[in-house]
Structures are given as structure tokens and as C-alpha cells.
Length: 77
Image (tube, rainbow, N blue to C red):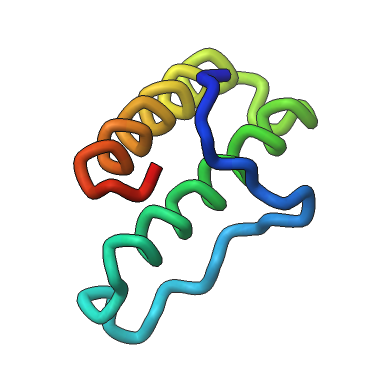
């Protein structure tokens, strides 16, 4: 897993999508995506979707890199 300055809580779970996602601030969107990434990682580690494990792990890593880049560009590191 890619290291990041962000440290999510242990009970993070995917958030419900807002009625109008366009109303989310950049910080809120990055937080939601980080929580979704953590949820995905926990699901992978728990053995869900074994046939997709490698692809999902690669997706999780790419999402982590993308979120780190977005945080750096927006100053929300």
C-alpha cells in the first residue's frame, strides 16, 4: 500500500453519494475517495472477490497515487 499523510479511521466505510455530487468540495471528495479506497483495501485483505484480487489491488494502488497527487496539487496533504 502506498504511504500517505492521510490516516483514515479504522471504521471508515464507503459514504453515501450526495444527492448532487457537484456540491461536494474538493476536500470532501478527496475524503470520500480515501474512505472508499480504505474500504476496498479491507475487502481485498478479507479475501473478497479472490478472482479479482490482483486487479483490485492494482486499482487500489493507482487510486492511492492519484489521491496523493490530487492532495499535493490542492494543498490538502
